[in-house]
Image (tube, rainbow, N blue to C red):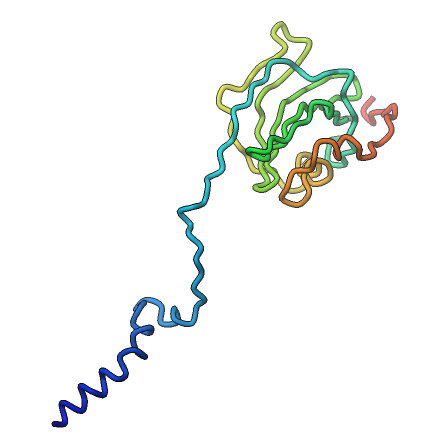
Length: 185
């Protein structure tokens, strides 16, 4: 009879003990809120294919203020051709770094504001026999903190983790062009 009472007692307490036995590894699982989030429904980020066919438009270059460049260097961007594709949210544009003596280095770059990364798709130098050189396998690289690219992303291309609208970037006030004298001349 005593064993029968124990069995009835255990059966009566069974529904109350069941939630505690759901996860042996986490005894506090029953206190966690249960949500309906299904990770398998997440769509992975996919970059769209990028084609580079010509260099930057010299007439469309706008000087951008950037305190992180070495002395005697100036940063220009082809803002007329700045794009942000809504499918992958990457800002793509031509950047030109120009020395005080007139030497240019141009790169066609993409910036992912969400991850703090950049990618160089192509290089351009009008003084070479073949001015445009497309990178065969471009790869994403982390933007180093306190670099000129970090300042460019923070001040011009990105609004927190989202890319700025190209039209709003074009309308932002830019510093007036000045004749910069290099301290090394």
